[in-house]
Amino acid sequence: MLRIRLMRIGKKKKPVYRVVVAPSQNPRSGKCVEVVGHYNPITDPAQIRFNEERVLHWLRTGAQPTDTVQHLLKITGVWEKFQAESSANSASTN
Image 1 (spheres, rainbow, N blue to C red):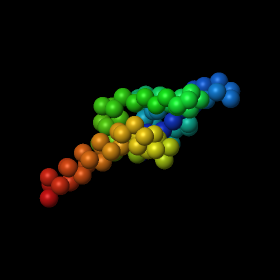
Image 2: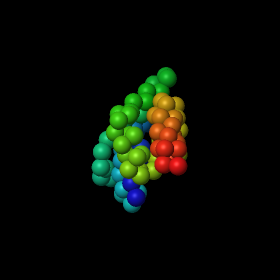
Image 3: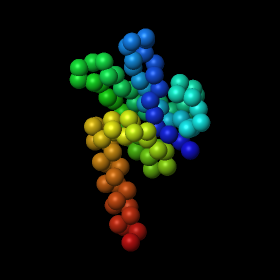
Image 4: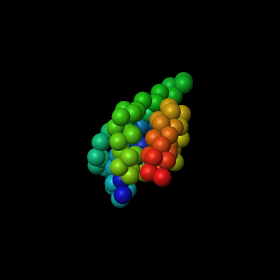
C-alpha cells in the first residue's frame, strides 16, 4: 500500500521534511515514488507547500496519508477538496 508521509532531510536539531509518496514497507528516509511537497516546522509560521494536483491524484488512486500529513493537508485546504470531490462522486453514482 502507498502512503503519503514525511521524509526528514534537515540537519541535526533543524528538521525539514519532504512530503513523499512511498510504499508503506520502506523506511522513513528510504526510496520514494514521488515528492509532492515540503514542510518546514522551524519557521514562524511553519511553511507548508504541496503540489495540490499530484496530492489529489495520489489520494484518488488510493494512497493513504499518515496522521501528520493529513493534518497538514487540512491546514492547507487540500483535504477538504478531496473530501468534497469524493462525496460528489459518491452522490453521482447513487
